[in-house]
Image 1 (cartoon, rainbow, N blue to C red):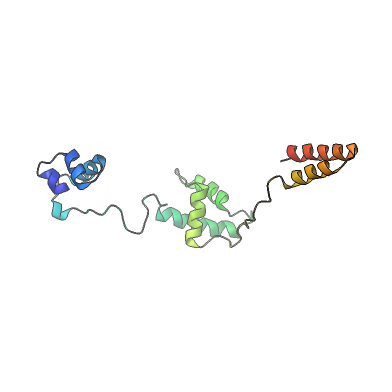
Image 2: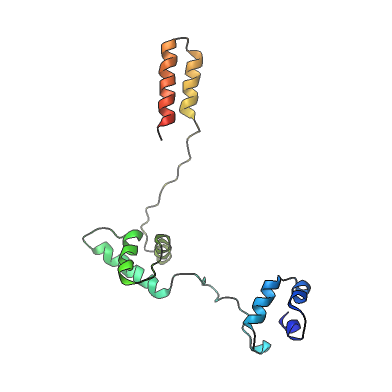
Length: 156
């Protein structure tokens, strides 16, 4: 593709011929501009590491803060406390989610995880009350059930 563009082919034609978008062809032409094609590094990224991953020195500082804060008297050593401590040290601070990802990657998170339980059936208590109202012939029982339904539907 690059060879074709350098030999005089239009970027749009090269994209159609090699089935790449025009923007991709233009990106690679610009990236390899002024270099010999046999010496061009066509690798897109470093293998095995995301380009937006937290810097190594910041990860090491997060790990050190986790250890220091755990041993401190205050008792707070979670991602929020680490982020607050980092704000005093540096200008660009990773988010709490990033701090949690770094801690998980380094194996420094506690093993306590939230237990997810299935949700109860929707409106199960309301259905029981309506069934009670339908079978009950008493006006007072129907009123009690109606009051219960309005209370249940109002509470969060």
